[in-house]
Image 1 (cartoon, helix red, strand yellow):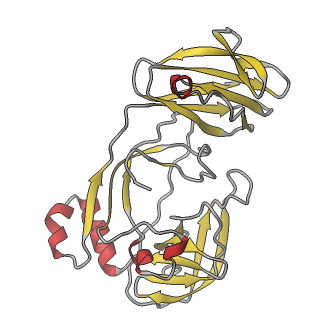
Image 2: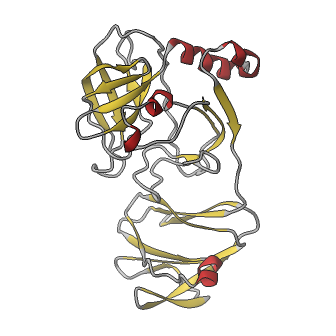
Length: 294
């Protein structure tokens, strides 16, 4: 998956979930030898390079007050410990519920990859792995979860050199220092597409059902065959995107109260139901938010 045109979305469970906000990526750095893989690349050199440093911007959803937590990094080429702790948001748990896997066994699978018995579920890739090598409330991060199979999980390590590379990036001297590192990294700046991204935050006490119609739907005759999006209380999702300067939106709750669509700018069929849609015109590219029961 290319990193251009994407955002850092902590705790996401899928394409539409945005539980804690959305942080635009300004630039990223990663090993030049990295090759996208997946399950087929487990136990191969692909996992050796499955790390990246990502420079993010502020949360674009201002209604969310959450902040990104921080921890120190720890880089080493040996393994003075045999147990680690991982944290993440696996998709088999409830929305916004993190899972902490403590005191997991680790061993070297290669100089750059550790194998572990930490529980790793779908949605946890890239989650931090904490190495209890120092005192303090939060142990340092020594790697990231990069893959798993039915037998074990894998951690891509932060080596001493990778720690020096990250420190050089943070100091703003990577361009001058990069020729001195044995592992070659590359920098890329994020590109932002000329699109409107539409989001809904449900602050109501009941579920709501939402449908969006864009002008792309009309051109491709896709219509609204996918039906309604169900949005739970306190859930924040991305419902759609468009390259045009407007879209139509309908939202009603499970008590049949219409939240958006009462102005009846147009009628469309959704799951064989005729419902009203409101037109929203967009003056510029970017994000458009709809908060229900503010």
